[in-house]
Image 1: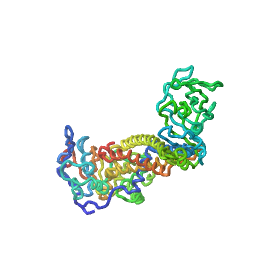
Image 2 (image 1 turned 30 degrees about the vertical axis):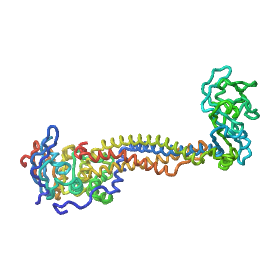
Image 3 (image 1 turned 180 degrees about the vertical axis):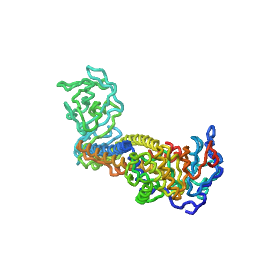
Image 4 (image 1 turned 90 degrees about the vertical axis):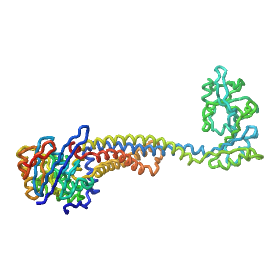
Length: 224
Length: 393
């Protein structure tokens, strides 16, 4: 299996009166179709790593190949284009837009791909069906349960047909039963060939991944 | 896409999505958006209304002045002695002349004037006039005018305001005032005039007396003419008064009423524009504040869009699109309201509402420009937000 992500010697230092080294020489790779979990306590650098992988943040040094392409030095417009077409995000607190329906929120996932609104809605319906919410597509997101909201967020992330799905504590705001259902959904996606990186501090979530990395003080510890 | 290759497909917002997203963004906080629209609308309405009301007022004012302005000729000579003694008679026979004669300062400096029972008023303009010159001001006089006055007879008419100040009222027996301690018999009081409003605070004496008393009486002739005859009368009058040296006299015809209207409209427009631009500026500042608040409140949304693939340019463009919608609504609403105000006020004042044709479209564009200007900084700030910070909220 070819590597979708290849990271070598990745560093991220936040400048200031007292510089903070959030990532230190991180080296790892993720093959296409894998579900990898990065675990560690708060402040260990998990989210910084996720932001770098998602091209929301720029590493200070190191190499990051996404689909065999060096993406560290890309101009912002190319990074934005990769986020629009190749990367999907799932956040702990969903980041759904209130006052809009589930369908509108999912259709938003591919809005920067310059697809027509009608086409985006068609795709959104497919992914809402995939996450089991086709019957709730016209519901305003504020009327949905926590589990349903996270399903909508996953459908939105999938709507741009990403090669990489990044999940930041996807079950952090859910009860164990709902969280389990979400993880089952992610496992199903992985089984379908979706590459997933999950950041979590919950060992039971990490245990569902095909591989786990530990993280402490910005350093990737041994593969668990 | 082939691994290692950068996508050549364009990303970013389609125009339809940009407008739709901007419209949704505006409706997130409808009350705030409505208030912003109203703020811009008030500024634009003020602009349209002030320009319209200024134009309407200018039209009314100039129409009321038209008749008098078109019917007035002034002739100036170097010295009063340069004019013949029968100015009134020479003018009276000219075609188009209603009445005319001498009416000008008897002396270059105002003089002290007193009555019997009052102290002197230190500085009173003294006007030298003939009966024709006084009549050309279309006066309303209590008592007698300057007709049937003997040459050299020291009589005077008091302006209404001066008469009050001197304690001189209409009376059956003659009253005396002293100019430079020389007694003059008051034969009448000028209650008001349609021309030469300064007569209200002046003393009018016969031109023949002024020539004797003061060395420098100014030679000004005022002629009331028939409508449309001003230019012809001006040419004929200088010949009639000084056939030997018409070039020694200068004739002045009042400018065209159209020019006056333009002048008045210009002055009122400038005043109105200053007020309305101030209002529009204040509305713009308020719009900056509300849009800035909107950016701060929607940080997570901005962060989400960045995660979904928005470039900073897309974020800025979206806030500018919201400003465009707000500015367009505000501009159209304001221009319409301004037109209605002009129509209502004009109707209430029984005047024909008048507004330059360029005003409504220019006001709409100006409202839009102010809103875009107001939205530029918030849009810039939104575009510059760090996506990670924005996602944290």
